[in-house]
Image (cartoon, rainbow, N blue to C red; front, top):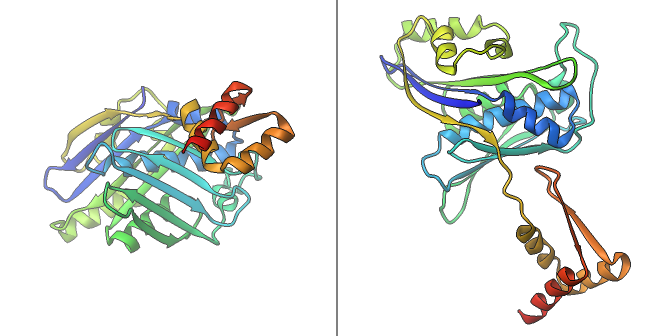
Length: 294
């Protein structure tokens, strides 16, 4: 089961969010039929989104990450809440690049570095909060960390990893976000930085049956970690025929009639899960009647 924890160092020097997202990313891969490189890019974004959403306070809060570095993948989008639900897609899921010289997937090359990370938080206020920073490496983790530093003045380390198996399925996926707290002293900061600078490949930590709590305490063994919360996570799309009807209504009567005259039916596809909805005959007539009655 995929799940996520919130933790704090008992000396209150840093807080930690960590998630195992293997099944969640595998669901996304199956929905979008992504190549290994696209799987890694989308998986890292979904994993980061889960933890970023977890930081929000209210059940109805929503967070959207939009990453577009001008590379062949196009836009990567993830939408999440504070309850462990995430959905997302990549514009061009069939893009794949040769491995880097070190044998790793070239996520940075596929994402590109000529663009921005944009984070939108809908917190139930009149206007959503929107922050945007330049992409640094295209590797996702460093770019999210830079977003936190420049947009929220929060010193963060973001570690994300997706390991793709030989059959293209997701072998392991997970990550963590560490954020220092105001009262951290120089000695603890140096110890934390040393630990973060000497991590092994992130996906290796999650390529086993270890509990997330065990992984957290193992990675940060020099610190006294207290787990304060734990929730399950999953890929969840709320698309429905009713929502697609609303999308068709927004097209307007004249344009809708023209489409019906030309094709006699309309097929809509959800960006997030690729589910298809077919509207024809009476269903379309009822939509037209509804628009006319407004």
